[in-house]
Amino acid sequence: MALRSALETNFDVDYVITYRFTDVSQIEARDDFKKLMQALSHVGLTTEVRNGDSCCLLVFVKVGSEKRFAQAVYRSRTRDWLYGIRTAEPEKETQQSLNHQSLTEAERFRIVHQLITSPQQEGGAGITPNKDPWNNVESIFPLHDHRFNKEWIKKWSTMTFLKAEDLDEIRDRFGEKVRRLPSKRLQDIIETEYNIRLHFTLPLPSPISRSSCFLRRLVLPRGFF
Image (cartoon, rainbow, N blue to C red; front, side):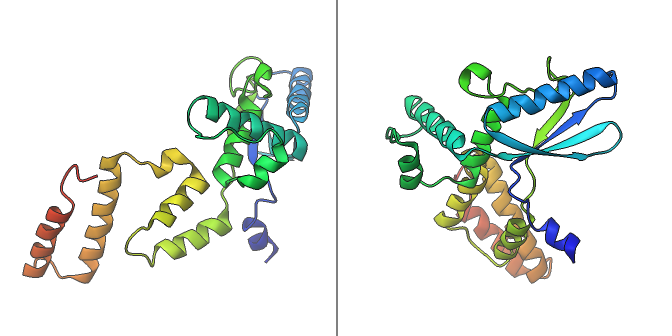
């Protein structure tokens, strides 16, 4: 019961960093790991460390300083405004900016990732996996939100058509790149879902299924999106 409860929450962990020290001395591994902890702490991130597999440590990273994080949000939104991604300049008061436009899950992950990987002159820790001086950092990845995934699969398994709100939910959770799938991929997804439903609801071959496939081609021609 406790294990199931633990799997349904991320304990507010934003990212996990795998630190592997296979081909280095004990002293070098210790010194490099200390530099990693200091770099993360310097940008307002807090960490918890757990043993991984052989010669590996798992560093669980989450926001430790809300003030530093709010400043990072303001810098990110200002950068988006300067590049034309946002239409309006964010408010200079960081807390007011967050109150005016709440932080989505996708934006939070993106900004925390920027805090970890962006160069130090841009306000980040400058950590790039497998690159000097972070050769022992193997990977940086977020955790799955099992509770959200379970609810999302249950919701989508009972839906026939996507609404604009559903696409907004994808954007807020996974970002713009996932929401704006290339047209061919999006059409392929719709056609695949349609064919699966058709396979389990109509016997094949049948005049009804053939007519349905023909109508589908008329409604969803190539290049429709």
